[in-house]
Image (tube, rainbow, N blue to C red; front, side, top):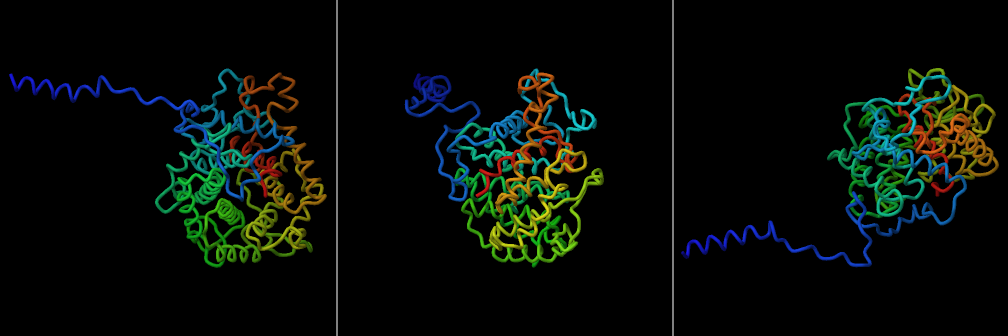
Length: 428
């Protein structure tokens, strides 16, 4: 009998928690409910001083176009939180919307995708930068869930040495630099302590990868440098510094400045910064050899010197580097072989920092060109009554017809165009 009673007591003790658990404590009435998919309630955040200017205080001129681009990016983010160059259409949440694909220059509707698997980490970083550029963070605001998912996707691919993603392709350096910059801005806008060591490790990898006395290129200290990779690395370090990451970058900046000086030389009596050698033209994809060369490297040089505090906006050397941007052929034009969003983004940033009438002229032209060709707002879409996200899957995006469109696809063209339009409230 005693054995039976003990057995019954033990059975009751083990089974009661399974079938008769106490209800959870009620949520305090002043605590907002957690949104579906969000691990914590929304909470106000205080950004780092270097990012406080991005927090929206008033209505911004032209912001409706940026918000349309961000809406497109939100609606084409994968379930895993990243943006995929050749699968964004499958990720679309715009059920029932018409998908036209590319409509520009008779290039075909299938001219939409970027490279498979190669640059998704960098694209994810670039898309996140479009949101952080408008002052959004992952703790509060309209796009907190989008950014949180993006952050989680990048955290998953950061290696023990701090590098974001695998190193089995030369382009991993771009992926890392852009992802590091995005994570730094996310940290700067939120001051989320969880992100700090992630950014610190990313910065350590950048410093380790630099060629001693020079800049960066493909790989870890490969011995050769180029201005494009060098600039992304410098901008990532700058983003981390603005976010409050304390790292000694003096030697790194000195070396990067030495590289930029080495590849800058007079061409037709005008200073020209080269891509990988003095005065050389900027790089072009094999599939984009017809595209005209431009002042991308000059704009990058200006941005680097300002970010590294090696020059001031009033310096005549910077004015000379940017002097050609406002010539007739160098201004933004929706001409088949002149479209280069990469150039437009960096030149916009450089000219805004320098200010003056040159900036105003460039900004006017840039806005007209981008707004006239943004999908859902362009004449062809309006005439077809495809002027809402519900009607058009591409609404808010840009067709990837520029010099780097075949590499990054629609995700790239939309993110970097949004970044260019955000310049006035994104930059310091």
